[in-house]
Amino acid sequence: MITDVESIGYAGTDTYNIQRKIFLLSYTETAQEESLVNAVEGTTLKYFKDDPYAVCATTISGEYKSWWLRTTNTAYFNTVYGISPDGYVGVCSVGGTEGIYDNGVRPAFCLPKNTVIYQDNINGENIYIIQ
Image: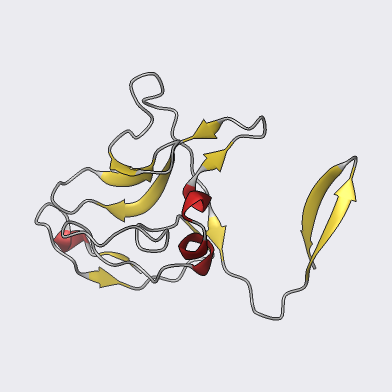
């Protein structure tokens, strides 16, 4: 589900469904509080609902970074939401003045319920393998 283009710039809340294999998470899916200036795209994912700190993203070295969501702030024509390094939702550049263009993405995808996922350890690092 994504925001309808006719809602953008007018604080609309209309959405429509699209078929996709890989996508960015939405404001709603990351368990953010309801807002009057964005559409409800999807439903809150249990992963974020159970752990409010799950929205924080780190690099491989453990540094916290900001990342983009797919949800637009519909009061404007050119503004999307993102998650700041400390887990807060924001609009435009959420990285602050030092990292204004240092926003990443956390792609998501859906798997069938019967997909087998197992954990392995390679070179001392835990990894997850999708079978």
